[in-house]
Length: 493
Image (cartoon, rainbow, N blue to C red; front, top):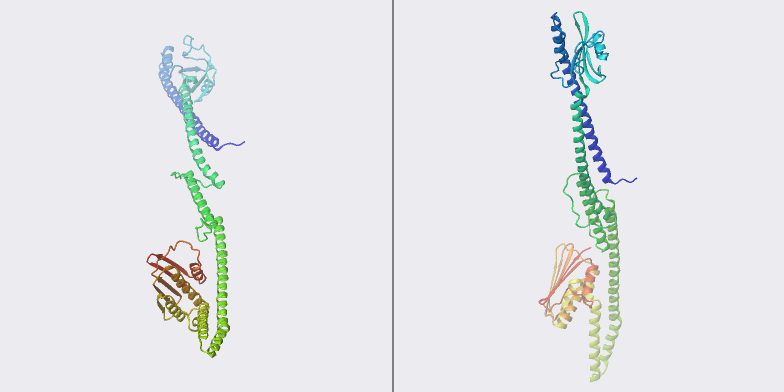
């Protein structure tokens, strides 16, 4: 049978409380009863001793009367409504007057009781037994010899009278116990409701977590008891769920740099998610590296093709045009010949420019600085754009590879092309600083500027950023009405 925790707590409180009250009541009742019984016997002992002394004094006087004896024994001060003392002779006859049968003459009442029998046997003691009326009494008996005759002196009080205070106390204890049990019932109900309510408050967030729902606005109780500690543990569990779900969400969104600290060495869930994140980050970086190498190889192949085409144009078509020009010099000097010579000269000049754009020979022969200087001069002559070049090298600078030099040359070339096409600028500052482990490229113009936050259809900026990315560098472009600034940092790897 399924018993709810409410009933378990309630029954436990009631049973413990009721059991405690009943146990205390039982103990208190019996303690008081034993105390009253002992007190009653002590009182009867005192009466019995006193009567014994008085009777002995009386019997020393040979002229006493039976009435004097009765006066001594019939005196019941302090013995209640049923207490009495009397003498029993060896014939088991009551010598004195009975309190209950005052008209019965002396020696007319037979006292064949255990108290009389023991007293006549010279025994002293006390007991709860039947008296000569066959009524339960507290009895104290002793032996006394008066003028050579054996008697039993008995002092008794009815059990019902003596025990009446205990019965009254028992009734009061029962009433008090019932009242206390009622209070225990009520307090147990309140305490049980309070405990179960707090447990149910824990049940709701735990059930939500079991369904995969993170509770919102969960209030942690300020209590410092065990349930309060459980509530704080639930709060820790909720926060842990939030951290783990946030980590999973960020991983799902592609944010592979998001990190959380595991709750403990045995936090398998957090460690598993972090391991999955690290694996995804590794594969992502590996994919980017493969893509970068692929793009690098593609651009490198493009540069090789440009170099080959430039060489082919110079070695084949250039030689043919040069031969044609020499043949024209041998022809008669007339108007038609002069026009042909001019046409061939223009073609040779254009072919040289195309070959230079495809792959400047000065870059392969003399390096990046000379190639950039040549590029600046040719653009200034062709477009009137004032270009200031500053090329600085540290003492312990690292020499860059030819492929890197080609990429940097193309970045500058693309930047100048954008300035000429779109910026309407009159001046450009080009600065290169080479250090031991990195290179800084700075290009600034005084053109009209553009919105650097927008994406444009043209390939100019994309080509610049792509080449910088392939060199694993960083590119920052800022632009305003006063002009555009391109800051590039390239590490040497």
